Length: 188
Image 1 (cartoon, rainbow, N blue to C red):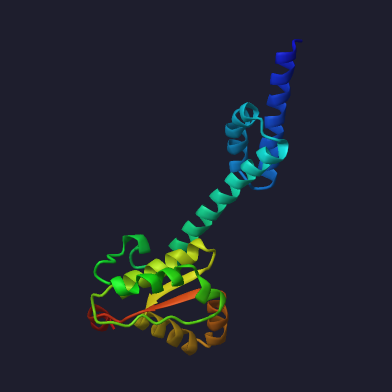
Image 2 (image 1 turned 135 degrees about the horizontal axis):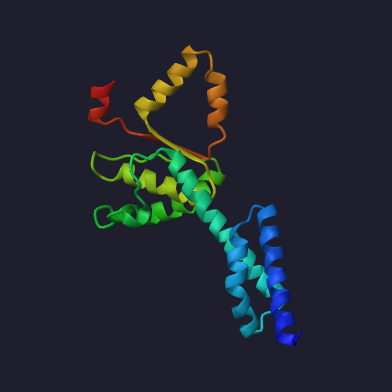
């Protein structure tokens, strides 16, 4: 058997092993990244450590992205609005403050944030955008209107489950209480 055929067979066997190990580790994107990066790594003269770091980096990035998407869906946002989509021309004075909040420092310090202003100024958009940013930072988020929160906690109290519900809510890094809108009053 020629040297080239031996190398090809060894590569095929190694990729089978990577596929098995990635499956055992529940890291499915490792197989794709390993195959995609292998030729590039050889051509670029990467060390084994550089190649492994690049493969694992792809897995971690994909895992973080999918985890953030799951947290965003579970949050219950009325609409998906990001900080990048906000009309900063309408509220230029809050840009730096919101940027500081988007870093998530207030969450690690367990501080509250209150957005005040007249209707139509973007408070819900900013709260949603901060919630999405928090989800991207790995925090669990819940979003509901004030009426929904009152109803939820009242129902839990009536059912004798308030302590359990409060304990469950403590697992969230960010709870967003949105203003009651006129339509909310009509539904109540």
